[in-house]
Image (cartoon, rainbow, N blue to C red; front, side, top):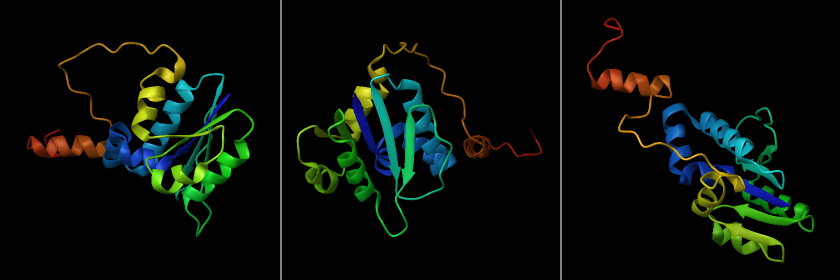
Length: 164
């Protein structure tokens, strides 16, 4: 069993896909995208726990637990506590780019540190250990995913709300 403990804020801010969603639709939308992706890709031999510095608790997704650091605390401490709690019950992998704080404080066998870019390659792009469907190449740009993005393009092309 592999227990993935993810520094959610760190992953969202460092990963291009989640950062773009955050810029377009806000942090909560990026959190939802992250948790949906993890739920979709989770293998039967994996668990995911995502820890955030703040925000509102959202409904749990299948196979993905999320938590928020308590008021006055940082997510790093919660991540380390979860790693120690899961230790001995399989392999624990902590996902963060904060190696100087979290990564260096892990210590012990069974614990590992994985950068956000490595996590993208191993789990998000790798299909969580399952075969990912190949994407077809297209010259067509992706459809707008938020009202903010639609409004931006309407403004860029000089279309006002009355003309729609």
